[in-house]
Every structure is written in C-alpha cells, then in structure tokens.
Length: 465
Image (cartoon, rainbow, N blue to C red):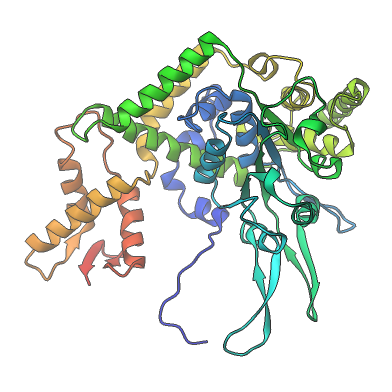
C-alpha cells in the first residue's frame, strides 16, 4: 500500500477523554456540586426548539446510552437506546434529529425515501482495478458506536425496513451474497422520525393504526415519542415569540452585543458535548439488588396496565427500563443505579406507552434554585471548553495570516503570540469569551491536517507552508 497522505476518519473518544482532560471543566471529572444535571443538559440541547421536553430528555438518554454487557455464554446485550419520533407535521421532528446529529460524537444521517435496504446495511460491489467483489458498508455500519438518524421513516418500503430488524436488536449485519459470507458490527443507536398514516395523529385510534409499522419493528424501539400539535393559545404565543426571537437574532450584525450571546450558546453546546462524552464512556453504574427488585416490580406494573389500545409490552420493555435507568444514573455520575433512576425510567416509558400523565410532572422535576446555581457554575467553567465555531476558527486563521505577513523571521509565529493577539481583538467586547490555548491548539491541528500550515507542537511554533 502506497500513500502520501492519510486522514483519520474515526476517533476513539475514550482515548480522547483520557489524553485531553485539560479541555474538560473540573466539574465534569467528578461533579457532586452540579445541581440538576438533566435540567441543564435540557437547556443546552436543541435551544432552537421550544418545548418538547419529553422528546429532548429521551434523546439525551439516547446520546448517553446504557451499558453494553457480554455474558459468559457469549451473548451480548446492547446498551444503545432506539427511539422513534411520531407526530403531526411541523412539530420539530427533523430539527430534533439535526440537534442529535450535532451533539453526537458520530452520527450518520439518511432518509427513508432516499435509502434502500442495502444502502442501510451493506452491499456487494466490484473493485474497478482488480475486478474482485468487495463489501461496501451502509449507513448503520458506518455509524458503528454512534447514532444513525433516519428521517421520513414511514416512507421506506416494507422490504427495506426488514433489513434493519437485525441491526436494531443483535446490532450486526449478516451477509451471504456472491460467495461472500460475513458478519459486520453495527453497534449503533437508531433514531427515526415518521409521520402518521392519516397526516394528523388520530388520538381515537390505536397507535399501531396511526403509525402503520408492524409490531415486530415497533417492539425494537425502546421509546416511541408522540409529538402532537395541540391547539393552545398560551403555547402558540410562546412558540411564536421564540421563533420571532430566533429570526431577530439571525439578522443582527456581528457588531451588535447580542452576537455575544450566540458565542455563549456555542460554548454551551461544547460543554454539552463534553459532558455527554464523559458520562457515556467514563461512568459505568452498577445494577444493585435493590434496583433489580424495583425494575422487576415496575415491569410487572407495566404489563398489568397493558390493554388493546396500547403498544405491546414485551420482555424488550424490561431491557428498555434497565437501559434508561442506567443512562439516567450516568448523567448524574452515580456509581450505582438508584431507585430514583428506576422511577425516572418508568415514568418516561409509561408516558410514551400510555400517555396518561403530563410530561413535566411525569419525569423527575428539579428545583428552580438548583437550576440557577448550576447555570452560574457552568457559565464560569465554560471558558475551559473547546469551542468549535466556524466564525471563531476564521478569526484564528485570519489573525495567524496577519502575524505571518508582519513577521520577518521566515513567517514563524509562536503560539503564545497568536493567543495574545487573538484575545487583544476582544478588548472592545468585555463579555466575549476569550480564546483558550486548547481552542487554538485544536484549530491549528485542523489547519495542519489541511496542509495549510506546519505546526510544531513541541516548540509551540507555527510555520508557513
């Protein structure tokens, strides 16, 4: 194999967290002082979408995920959480998918109408140089250890939907075509969005009649979230004000002070991503005897409440309870799964199955004072988070180019001089977020990968190409 340039397209996020703990706020390492962590994550996730707290909390649970287990017999129990969003048009389903893609470390997007069964799983192709047959990975294989987002899930044909049955439970793709027999890993969480059969969701019909998907496929989703377009004057007014506020902010020039709040929003997103990564890979809560007994009782209660107008409650719901409780414990950095974690999992699961309780009351509510204290603490620590924003990256590139032109020593610029020059540009904006060394280092490595500069990390120098 001859190559003159290699780009790494997959990253080990466990290794990144181990090597770059300096980019994480101190509260992320062990945060007993962080109040209401789920409420704060809810503030940072999909801020452009008003309301939809139940869907947002479910998607946060999916990003964190449960714990994958491998039994002594070799059986593997998945830890990924599969979610289906179903509801009326114009209820921000696609926006929630995009927010998940932005927050997830690895996410692959596709649509139901534009995807086939082999496009989702794998296909057999021909090598143009050797003429030999080869495997070509599909979306779920490329999203291994990540999230695959499928929009317009209801537009897929029946045959194409059958192709992901194995992926959603066994998390593998088995192929036996053209003399090739292989089993490929597809250890990903599935997030799908679909519209009801009749356009609008009819609450007088059974969920199966509204969704139009077979029970064998619906049972593979841990949560089925309904997003309904209810007519409510107070809610409609709040949504209108939120949308108008977004449009107003998008039209403000960069010199306006409101743009600073955009930078703070970006920093919150970076904080959110770091916390999700840390909770997902570094926290491994254990299932105690007390939690096992509680989950067994809650599962029996779910089974006793099932009737003809609800989705079938199978043994997969029991595993869903375990995964949701584990994800909730991870978010709170708990070493063991507690009763409150089990209650949260039961509330969110029963809300999606029966829909008989208000979302904000069914899911654990945090104290408002704790939320405010957490916001203040996060605002202080967000400056330590690497902020990935295109506009800030452009500022770093432009400032570096100016220093290289002004420098007479063969275009060599020290990282310290670059950092001083960058923060000097923020003197007119006292509330702006200063550039950190970690942020500058991240951008310089990106420019070096693009062969735009030569970055000497050891001596802290930047050479022009």
